[in-house]
Length: 74
Image (cartoon, rainbow, N blue to C red; front, top):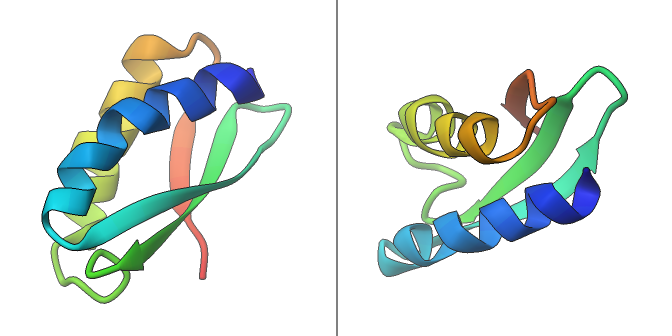
């Protein structure tokens, strides 16, 4: 599952980088919870929760079977 998550994040990454941000894959738990770290402009952006849930989480759930949630850690 790790490889699938990383591949899906690589598809999302260019959109974030255009706005000066990025996403770093941290871990995926057995229950399907993916941990990521938002960096750059995304790290302190007030819209980061929206980006995380409506962008990153939605895409990962669509492309990687077993992903149940995506959370941002610091």
